[in-house]
Amino acid sequence: MTIRDRALPALTLLCVILSAPLAQAEDRPGVADRHGAWRACLHRNFALQAALSSRVIAADAALRTCRPSEQAYLAALSTSPLVDDEDVARVRPALLLRAKGWLLEGGPRPL
Image (cartoon, rainbow, N blue to C red; front, side, top):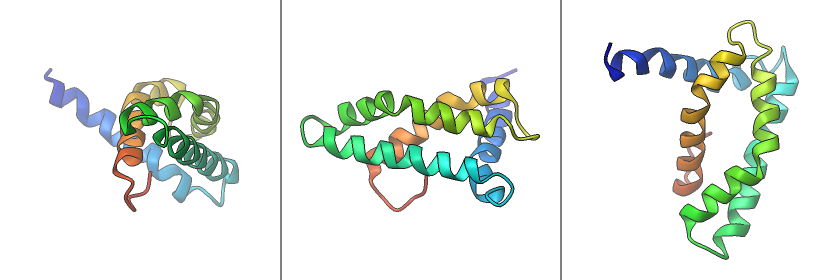
């Protein structure tokens, strides 16, 4: 099994996780709220750190500082019948890379 073969299921699961806040906002408002709180924390902390250091260092610092918000968001996602704790743990690295890219690009692309 190649890396590409193993990456496809993880990427598929990541798409499910990333769409969960939007698709299930009516069913579980806590997920959407926690996702929004995590994004706000990342944005706020990145802006503060970027004024004092490089953007890459600021992104890493924001991810560390916002870890409690991230954990609350991922915990809410793991209550979905579509994913469990193991699934969330498996895609967490890809989610963090996406969040870091979102911070560094500063564009309109949603997290």
